[in-house]
Image 1 (cartoon, rainbow, N blue to C red):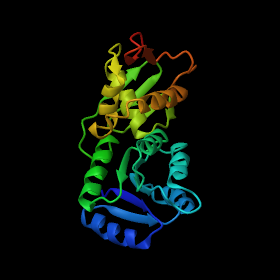
Image 2: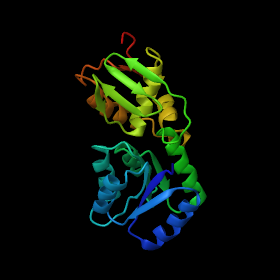
Image 3: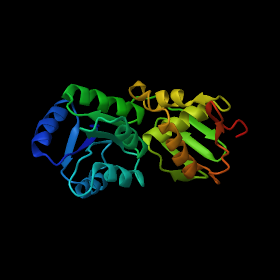
Length: 229
């Protein structure tokens, strides 16, 4: 089955270059030129990954990312000319899975797409591991989580952090280790973004995020998954 991509950019020339190249790489490709259209297309075509330009008219790519993350775990690569470290951190914290700075080669784009697809479990032929931890069921291959039978929608980055911790209860991971597991070596200078992802995770899986049972803080070091679950 073909992997479906959604390209979002308000410049037709950019889409005219990217779309045929990615189709030649074996992807099924749809396009959108605005934020509202992108949100509608995600509902209609159910892509596995969105390549999202930051600078869109009216509704920015950042706002689109925020809206998608309210209900969707689709992979998101944010594309922008912004090069400041603070901008990259904002993009990652609102839910982007990768961040590509213009100008970039189409080969680099394909490599980033395949990397995010691997992390989000959208590539086939993966061994399946299902973890049962307390009230949580965590399905690695399907990239899905349930709590007391009710599915919990996580972003790909949130899922990778949760699975990494839950696979080894009691083991303490530093922020850098979690960043490497969830995003990769491209963002090793952004360890503090892990705190934001952990905060979002706790709101989704903990009964009381202020008294976490699943994801526990080890002060001065990092985080661990509760051992008694």
